[in-house]
View 1 (cartoon, rainbow, N blue to C red):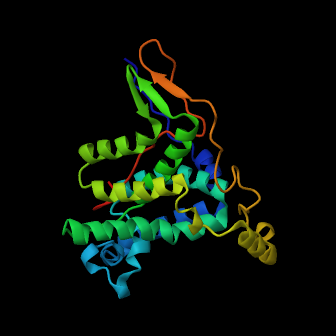
View 2 (cartoon, helix red, strand yellow):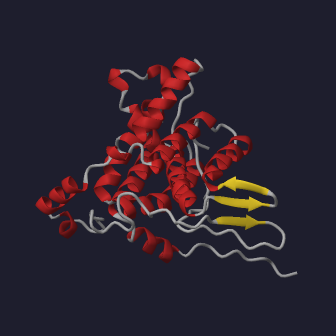
Amino acid sequence: MAATSFALPDARRIRSYLRRLPLATLGLLLAITAFYIAHLFLPGLTQWGALIPQEIGISTLYRLNTYPLIHKDILHFLLNTIALVPLLERFESEHGTIVTIALFTGPFGLLPGGLYTLLERYIFHLNGAAVGASVWVFLLLCNEAMKTYRVNPYFIILDWKIPTWTTPLALILVINFLVPHTSFLGHVCGAVVGYLWGLGYIRFLAPHDKILRFIEGKLNLLGRLPHYVSVDQKTYGRYGVLPSTSNGTTRVGPGIGTLSATNGVAPGPTGGSQRLGL
């Protein structure tokens, strides 16, 4: 019997893909990678930057921004970055580079991290340390799920009509049961913020287009920065694709067509950590 051969990923394609990434996505990927390399030489870095509810105070609020950048081991790092990069690239293409940087260095860490801290510290009286970019993965998956829901509200398995917006929640449950040392609560906190963004309730956190155009014009960012996505280059505009008037459903079952969803994203591998991740 002939030995089975497995094709290795083409390094040239991977390098080409990374070189085409928009600016903010590439910057965050480099930051996550830098933190992972640094923690190999500075083991105390994880403890310094982790989101530890009982240690959050005025002087340690930086933890609400550092925890998504820190990963515990190589598998944790790879799973999270592989899942995050395509979702983040899509988000930046839709909303622009400045908005992506502003949100992912601010509210998209603060809001899920703050919610996690409040629940752990004051409701459940726990103190689980949280690190990992999986909080961003589920945030972005839930945002994509809401866009998919507007176009294709349901998929049908046999006689069950299941809302498409619930797909990330199902993934959270599966990961919680199958992968040890994950935080169900942490993933849910990321999902809540993603749904709020997808529903439009926290869109006010993004800078207004007029402000963005002023900054871009004064600094000539589009001309000076490679792979910069300006406010006028966004793929779908600030509020995404408008809902379809058709009541689309997707059927899955014997003798029925395959699942498809316009503007949807199939859940990819998801990472985690001590908590919040794998």
